[in-house]
Length: 381
Image (cartoon, rainbow, N blue to C red; front, side):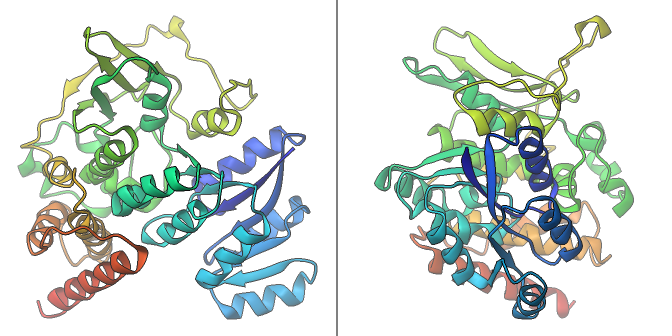
């Protein structure tokens, strides 16, 4: 039985991970979790998982209230709280499903441990600190498994003795794959929050609509698989999750139903493939049709911006990420139009001098500086 920590347990990935644990009660023992403000979900989890010994919460008020109610559990908060959990359960699997910049610190602290296994659903960590993460993996003999359908697919398609010629990264294109740039000017919040294939949170759904999510996945793939030869292909059915082309032009691809349960189940048991009642097979009797089209970089500016970030000078990627976070909020607040999100991202990226940020403090300082600049810029408009 393997001990498990889930950071970001109240989100979509965290909840699906709990489903895997529930269907395999003799394989995993849940020891620690983190939530942000969703105390209602947390209390349900505590009632159904009595093995939880530590919980990371958003603030000291929550910590005090919950500690009084659940005296057998240790409640922690802040960066020190993550450190305490990781120090207490030093050999546990760690699933980091915290969204955004907030997930970077627990990623880096997990990898400061020795011979740890990190299941990383926080792609922002690799966008912001890919080189640093790779250094920690080598220095401390850790493992990192990407909890992302595309990168899980690529991982499965790699061959030990053959160099990759090209990574083929698939993208559904979301709701707006066939809309022109002019048509995008009319998109409103309700349209941007719909996705044809995946049930996801609000932030990632909008990022999929702008193709920023795929842009981040380009940067993620660069750091994971050590190549700049990454081509994005639109595949609206989301059945082929990504592929790898080799020097003989053979392409190996991974296909499955579009569900993150498949990815979680794969990496929870890697290198074994274990049957799970939650998973469903592809039904070829449905005469399913798979279509593919190379993504137009002129149409999808976010992809252009990603290719600019494929180097060790991660300051540009930090600007990309924080600008997207702030501009997404401005769109949801009705302050800017949907089509302006990526244009403004480029605007703020162009203000940044390329440089390598080599630790968490440097990355956080630049992130906070750009965030303030964006807030000030729009407060004056």
